[in-house]
Image (cartoon, rainbow, N blue to C red; front, side):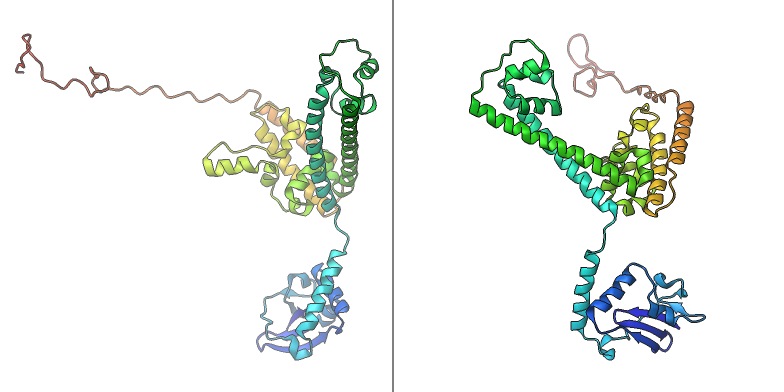
Length: 376
């Protein structure tokens, strides 16, 4: 006997005879059926399924492996029309099921992915607006870029505005080569700088939010890579679940997809690392050691992501110790860069030397001194 679950009920089927021996139908209410199907999609065992469990019973889904051994069965002969369930009812059930699943709480990594992408968009906007502000305000005070950068540059313009006031705030005495600005022009520039300041503040808020969510959702990844780089790795992978399913070699190369495709299609050198190159342990290492260190890092990150996804214990400290130990071994084993292979010696050409430029050698018959052709 095999337990088969359909959208309208649970059935105990004789596989050889293709006959239903027992069945328990769901209530003909779309919301009730949708709630049961949502439990099925989450991998839970329904009470109706548990009531069918007997000795030596088998199941049609791996989800029910706790009740019996999974076995394939063709259940097409169990039709909803034979039990009073219409296609219109199935349509209503699917609509209710969609509402239930969309209202379910999302995992934290989904919000982390969106936050990282929002942070990237914010940084891109900051770079564009900062470049524009430097060109715009540089018409009035080009020397300010040598004494203030990034957020401070925008803050001085937004709060002080006039060149003389900024010089007093910086305690500087210099003569600027910039031109004078009218009041209406200065107002627009200061408003633009104020908008840029708001973006800097939003960037800080996003970074704090990502750090907090990473500590909750992926503490082991955060312990190895830090909150910002760990969140970026999750974003590139498409979520913590997908990251936990990737092998160590794939984790190592996440972010280097273009270089990998160039290697596969054009025969260029294969990449040794992806976004994990931003980790100090990798990018501070000599170039000939980075491959081994990146491989170690990819393996430990694959372990950390699996532990984080399945809510295991915190092992970040142990993984960091393993990485540090392996890095020390690599540094001792490969202290010097590998020697480059020597070029092969030039190939000697034994062909007769060409007496005429661009020809194949003088193949004319020898001539006598008198200019006439002679005989050999």
